[in-house]
Image (cartoon, rainbow, N blue to C red; front, top):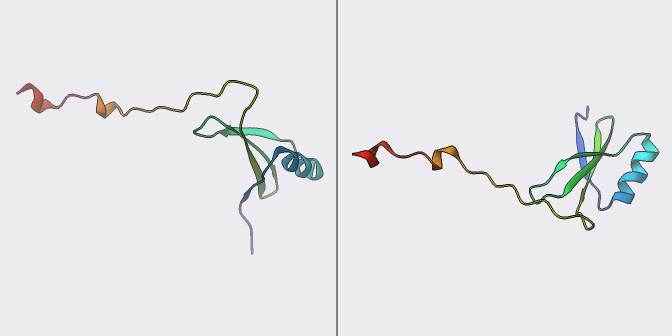
Length: 80
């Protein structure tokens, strides 16, 4: 059996750093959540461990807001 990809979440950064150090890999920011929290991760082979970090010492990013361009379009029937 071949493992293509295994992603596991750990509860804290200490666990992620310990695992990364033991595997000889670095911890990197992999992105952000919709709430503006950092997603940190480390990968060794097919295994990636991630940890969501809620910032406490800096202002939180505002939540993402998306508006469809179709919501701003006028209907052709409105001009009749």
